[in-house]
Length: 346
Image 1 (tube, rainbow, N blue to C red):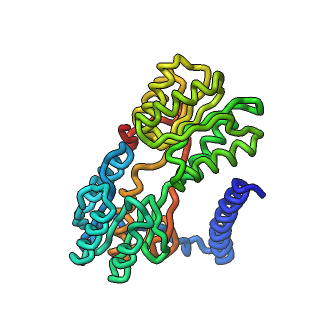
Image 2: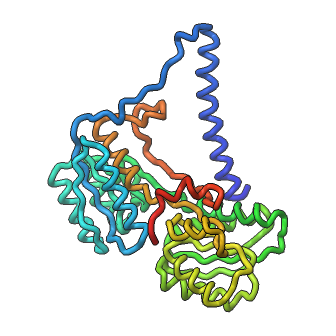
Image 3: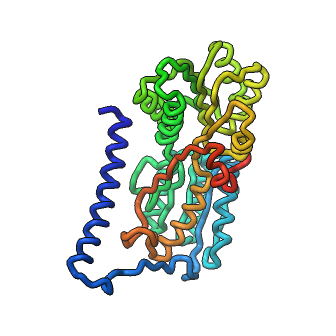
């Protein structure tokens, strides 16, 4: 069984489990024969509760996605009068971020939302916070230890690759001779490896593979340089997936400079720039795969619920789940209006 098949099977298993619960409730109601026993779902989660102090730390905003994720977190906190948000200044230094978390611990905040510069590098101080009784919500980059966070919220890097690959499979419509290219991010990062693996697995399922591949570095300059090299090496391309919309600005510049327009391009992350181009429908880019910049905003909400001993209102569980992985949908001109308001500027 392929990795993609195993993952999809896992999803089916989860769906089956959820269905089983729903079926059990229905049968119970039928057996009773009394509609008055039906429960009405209610939630008081948005009502103000005890004021909680949440510490938030994220890397310096040297990338459009990072800037958006920090802004979204702070805007989300403003929606709740019972959140006192303490925001540490964005930094590129691991030791400084560790110091920020230690300050939150000393200040005895009620919860910490942490997007680490490096998950491994921030694991020990996150463990220290948890041992001090302060729940940590880990955003995007996982710690090395499962004990370092009360809850982890992640984008779906593997799922991004799968979504991009499945989109190409659908567009190719059985043409197994189509030429596919990929511009990855930083190859040494697990997130890049997961995206590429998902892409490869999805293409495998429809008889395609990656014919040309280069790696960039999530910057405009790096994207332009990598794309120029790719276009010189590949005289004809049918489909191109660029993993990151920030570097996509440079990729688009290289494509324009080369005068190439024979292929369909798919982006990654979901920037407003790319969505505007998708909506205009007058360039090679026809879709992008979402990697939500609202992860930390979700982290703020979850931290508030955890600190107030509340649960997610749409789940039967009495506590906030330990891990949440967000979806990676494909945005096209047909559904771009649903996503563009939450997009970030690259």
